Length: 332
Ligand code: GZL
Image 1 (cartoon, rainbow, N blue to C red):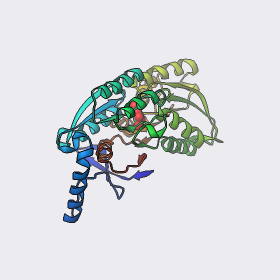
Image 2: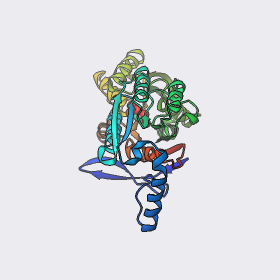
Image 3: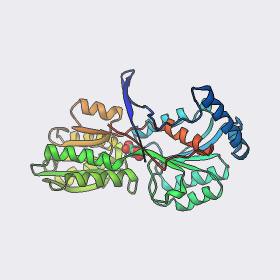
Image 4: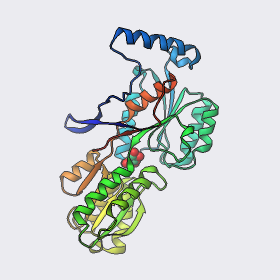
């Protein structure tokens, strides 16, 4: 397992998380000394014959199966991936967004196999159901790199995964909740991410572990599918069922659902961040604005900028270089 630190920098007034690749590296081709350069060149020459045509200077054909466009996080992640898998970086990218539909995403991966791409990158909507199509990719000798979310299939069926420690994000959120609210009776509702997705599973597990033994009582929990509209609809249901006075705390698995919950809470005449406190994960721009306005009480970062690492992994895998199975990007 490799842990990548990241530096945070403010660019044009927008908080953007940038990766500072540390000793574990992420790029394989560039080198400073002439000796290293000639070694790299001769290594490349020796693999060029056996490796896919792409190492002969032709662009690397990559199929990217994205979940869809369900959240602000996803938009930032897609932008990061498209920037990294650019023609200037030696790629010919085919992009597919599956609109949060697991069957459509599997079909997209199958189409990439039929197109005989050099490599497949994907952010699996849900963790289960991938063994079959990953075996088809392996049989077609097409490596698969996972980014952000992961799968329950054996790790022999994919080359590498780069993403975030979702369980740690849940523990961080739950630890803060316990410190702030754990000593008084606190009725909490949870807006879950997409059912069966790695972030939803792991954030719930981490949060529940962290609040164990406190007076925070989970009175209800339902998926809002990581969307603003989903979070709003589920929160409206909770407010109808328990009343604004019957809910003290909302734990939202991402900012977009928290922002939907804010709309529902305000429509019910209550004050988010005061009458009903909110804890969330992602730290996208709109989430940070709500935090600054006091409508969200605490946000755990989830870094969306995974493109450079994923692109470096694809080049490493195609060059026959050894890669780690799991590369965790650190969150703030
Ligand atoms: C995290 C990612 C999650 C984000 C949500 O890696 O899978 O999916 O937290 C997004 O905002 O929808």
